[in-house]
Image 1 (cartoon, rainbow, N blue to C red):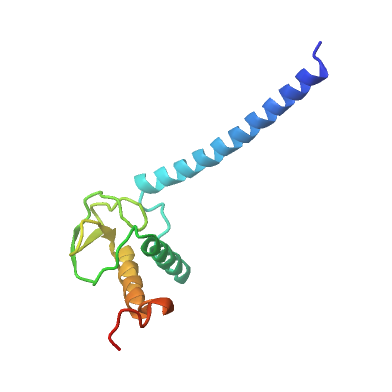
Image 2: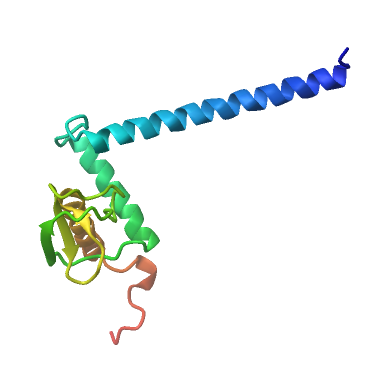
Length: 140
């Protein structure tokens, strides 16, 4: 016969296992969906929308702010995808897609990702220095 302490321990362990299994199921479903998109490009959602463009530009802003991406001037080399990972979205750039590389670096991006990167780089340049830096170091 189990004691109350043993029953409580068994219940707590079961609860932990159930939660762990739920997390594994969620991760498995995410991987299956990603695999389907890689295996069959027609399965993926395609086309543009204003919401996805905003999301892409927000991602680029975060990457620029963190220093993981550097602003670019728009000069780039373009060519057929080489199955390299895009520095913006992290997805592979397939041979059927356009791959763009800034002239100043070795990072590659999809064309839409590059355009968002370029747009946000221009936005950073137009903002200028933060208020607390203005006027410092100038001869005026």
